[in-house]
Structures are given as structure tokens and as C-alpha cells.
Image 1: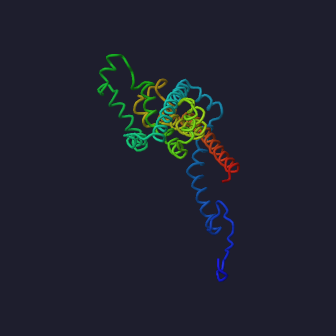
Image 2: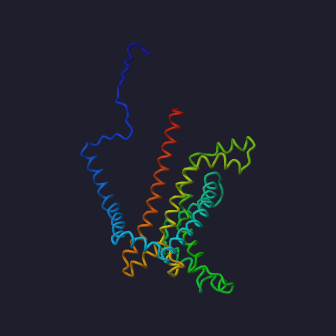
Image 3: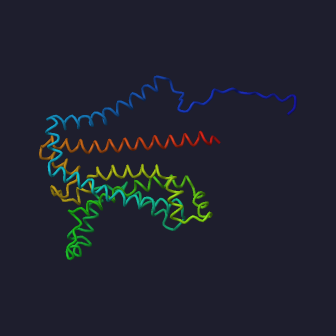
Length: 297
């Protein structure tokens, strides 16, 4: 560097994560608007559900919950979720693995099919199963001949629930597995590990939090699904009513205390799901922060 060269050093303030240049009043206004909308459209209705559920007292609330039809709806809801979620878990892992790790013809088509339940109304998906398995559907005659009941029974409810919850696990895992690449799996295979051993000891630990996150979202949707299940269930009290359908029936009968009692239980399950979701998000952030501290480069 020549003597005539002048070096100018500019001292800039250190960057603070999350800092903005907006004035304080702008930030306060935006935060106030966001919190007001959340309180008005989320918190207040939720509190109203619980207030209405307990309006006639604790004994009336318990009586509504332990009613045989309500207990049947609770059991069916939990059973449906217990079947649909593991099946979607298996599909989601297989689909995400295939899309993230392999190149094959039809990959774009598979991605489109995974997203299909997001764009199709749940009522339409229920009607699809009516078209397939109804008395006058494509397989209706065969099912009647072999005394197989799909519609207005548990199998139809499970199938409809699987359809609407189809994308949740896969869509959580695909971007995660794509961002991680194949290097660790390839290294494990080179060292002599089998494909199954590589999955359990390399792939699964890397995707466990995303997998749990997808399972929780899938379970929440499975328990709260109304449209598709309403079409295929037949609304048979004590047999094919899930909790959302039971709430609708009770409300239409002007049995508001019982309707809000079952609705509050469903809302409570949703809040537990939300708490688990928040816990997993915190755990993921903590893991990332720990990894950055251990490997700052």
C-alpha cells in the first residue's frame, strides 16, 4: 500500500438481533394491534366456551361429560386419532425420505398429491369416500356382498381423517431433511452400517423434533376434524359421533350446557397440544443455540 493511500475505518454500532429502526410508537402500535386481535378473536371466545360450560356448575359439567353418548364420542375421537396418526407418521417419514434423499420420476407428482388435502375441502374429501364406498359407489356392491361396512362406521371415519391429516408429518420433515443433506447417511453406509441402522442412529436423531412437531399437528387436526367425518359418519349417536359431531348435535338440540361442556374438553385437548408444540419449539431453539455456542464457526 502506497503512502498516499488513505485507509478510512468506519465504526458501526454492533448489530443487535431483533432490533428495528422503527420509532417506539410504531412498535407499540403494532404490538397493541396484534395483541388486541389475538385477545378479541382467540382468547375471549375460548374463555366464553369454558364460562358457558361451567355456567350451571361443576356437577352439570361432569354429568355432560360422563353421558354415555359423550363418552362414546370421546372414545371414538381418541381411537380415530390413535389409528390415523401412526399411519400418517409412517407415510410421512417414507415420503419425506424419498423426496429429500432420492431423485426419481414422479417426484413432483408426489409432492402435489401430498399437498392435495390442503386445497380440497374436507367435505369434498368425505364425498369422495361416499362415491367409492357408498351403496351405489364404485365398490358398494362388492362391499354389500361381502358384508363389509366402510361408511357410517369406524373405518370410514378413520379413512376420512387420514385423508385430511395426510400432509402434516411429511410437510414438516421434507424441508428439514432436504436442508440436512445426505452426507451423514452416506458416511454411515460407507462405515458399514445397514440402511435400518443408519435410519435409527443417524437420520432419526436429526429429525426427531420436526417429527414430533408434525405428529402433534396431525393429532390436533385428527381430533378436531368435522367436515369429512360428518359426511361419512352418518351421525349415529353412541356409535359414529366424534366429539365435534357430538357438540353439533347437542347444540342443535338447544342443550347448550352439554354442548359447551364437550366443546371445552375438546378445547382443553387443543390447549395441551399447543403447550406441547410450544415446548418442542423451545427445545429446538435451545438445541440450535447450544450447537452454535459449541461450534461458533
